Length: 104
Image (cartoon, rainbow, N blue to C red; front, top):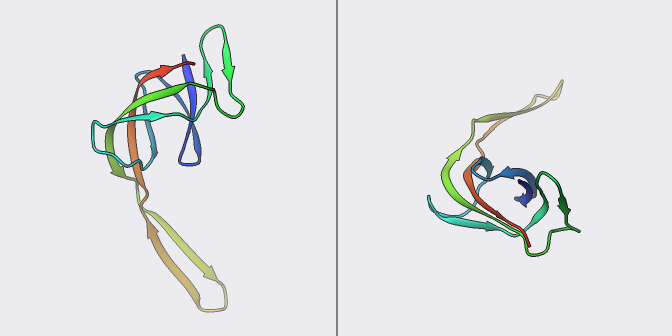
């Protein structure tokens, strides 16, 4: 059984027991999070597609890690105008472990 959830403006395919890296979520390590925006739930023989979400469905997860990603260098340049800008960015991420997928 798997589900497609929406968090942080992105969609993720999740399965029970799987670890997924998502954009930063507020919470301590070991905190429980419920995702109510479930777009699809599917198992071996049937699929439940929401419009836009599946009514009554939720996914329960636990925060397993808070971390920052690799540094990304942003470099802008306009040739022949002596314009150069260099900037770095490190995104915050949260690793969650899926505990349960509840249907309606």
